[in-house]
Length: 89
Image 1 (tube, rainbow, N blue to C red):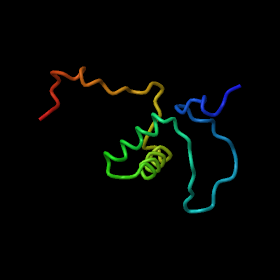
Image 2: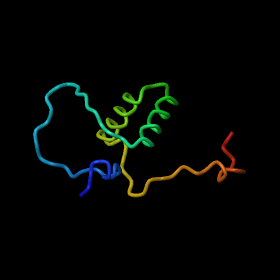
Image 3: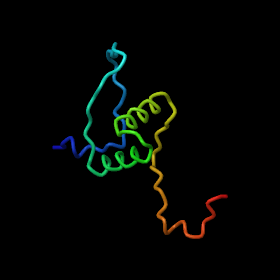
C-alpha cells in the first residue's frame, strides 16, 4: 500500500471536473520532503522573501502559463563542471 509520503511530487494529478472557489484568496498547507522544504527556504532567502510568497508566486506563474512543466528536470551543473567556462563580461 502506498502512503502519501511515497507519492512523487514531480507530476500533476489529472484535471477533475468540479466546483471552483468563489473567494478572492485562499490559504492552504502542503507537505514537502525536508530536502525540498530546505531548498525552498534557501531560494526564498536568496530572493529576500518568504517561502510562502515564493511558493505562491511559482504556483501563480504555473497556472498563468508562465512556467511549463518539463519531462526531464534540468540539473544545475556542479561548480567543478564550470571551471574554465567564460561567464560573460
